[in-house]
Image (cartoon, rainbow, N blue to C red; front, side):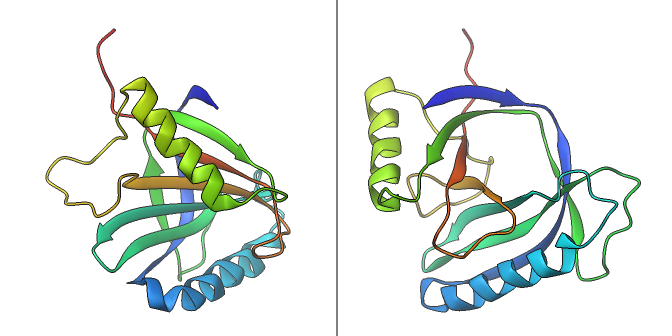
Length: 159
């Protein structure tokens, strides 16, 4: 685990919102975004697909699936541009031989041990102790069988 800061960047994304019982629909959306974008020669970061999860539902989440783009790229009409602001993150590498639940348990423990807090948007109600989670996956990928990077936005504090 490490703390890193990433500069502002943009992602062409498709949005999904649903309950935990509907996660198979989310997997379909993620695969569809990957298929739609993977053949594009104008994408500099086509080897990395991002997922942004916001736990603003008590029974599920809001998720965006997409690829990093620059402003000159024309995006499909089924997507929109999300601006990801400069942010400091807890960065964790998940290896497919491990249990993802164990990895997230270690992340929860890190917050408990360090006293740091995950970032929360002001005025937004969240239903998870890790309210915002970003994940970066290699492309192409097999759903549920891959290494990936986890980024948890951190609450900024004065040092």
